[in-house]
Amino acid sequence: MIPSSTERFVAWRYLRAPRNEGIITLTSVFALVGIALGVATLIVVTSVMNGFREELFDRMLGFTSEASITMPGDKIDDPEQWSARAQEDSQVRSATSLVEGQALLSVRGISTGVLLRGLSASSLPHKPRLFRSLSVESRTAFAEQEGVLIGDQLALRLGLELGDGLVLLVPQGVPTAFGSLPNEATLPLVGIFKTEIYEYDNGFVLLPLARAQNLLGYGQSVDTIELRLEHPEQAASVQRRLQQLLPERFAVRTWQEQHSSLHEALIVERNVMFLILTLIVLIAAFNIVSGQVMLVQDKRQGIAVLRSLGMSPNGVLRIFLAIGCSIGVAGTFCGALLGLVFADNIVSVERFFERLFGIRLFPFDVYSLPSLPSRIDLTQVAVIIALAVAVSFASALYPARRAAKLSPIDILRSS
Image 1 (tube, one colour):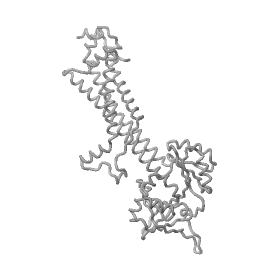
Image 2: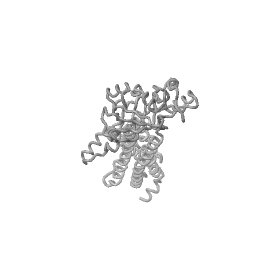
Image 3: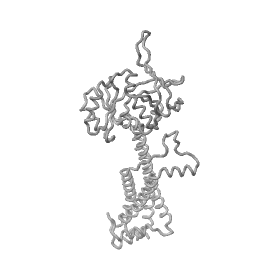
Image 4: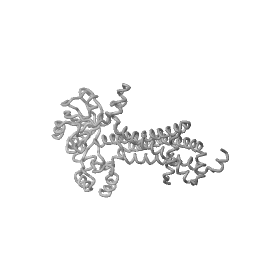
């Protein structure tokens, strides 16, 4: 299907339509621009959605874990043994214990419900976003089991500052002669963390593991063993191996399962957006069809002359395929270049429109992100380019086949 030099020459002459055929040229320009805008939009939107997904899960995994081991309905009595067993898998970088329970936080007469989480200071470096948000002094104080850590939103809501004493009450009762009383502890605030996820920053209180075990009445037991993996995207395969390695009473959950609703919603949203935006390319492809049909109708006599000079129907087919594909390929690669430049400089583009219109396009207090995130996936870009080229080829095929079927005798007889 590769056109010869003569066929390429004729196709180029037909593309450069004279002034009296301006409507055909205009239709071709619209087709080229439409495909370029469709491809550019697809690349930008998929890149921004990739950035959102990566940023969101980076924040989540900066506070939680890629996988966890629990014992449903019971506590893990010997966490060191099972942590060592889990680390026999080459993909497991670290295994740390934690306990978790509900508590009532009270300070200066104000009370609010919080989720109490006890973890060791050695596990903080394995939670990168949490670790980076804490000062060296806060990390040291927490390691010395001097106090608690809370999120910046909770601190802002309650007006707390470092050094304030926090009263924690947990439902686990202390038996007395007058009945069971809530367990209570008063601890100073030694650090304020910021994960930029409202749920974590507004509702969690972090304690040293030993203090949390004592407060919740766990003894040496824990709720969960958190696992950090070398490659988080391979969590499902690690899960299968650990389920075979550990006794049946243990359950291994991955980060995809822990955030399954959000993970699936993002995948569905990305696929739906891709499908919707692909319609832009398909609509632009109709301009190729209409432009080519008009061109074939206009060049009927020229086609008859070419056929009379000995050109085969396949030669005519290749000429008009070359014209349609040239428009589609040019639009595709122009759009790919535009989309890549736009996606790579999305922050600068955002700042430009903010200055131009005097509004904040991406408010931090709504999205908890300083700017639009973007991550270009070259595989997705290749798929988009291949899709656009395929659509362009399919659009050019019908007019080209119609031109190839024209009878030179009928055309010359009617002219």
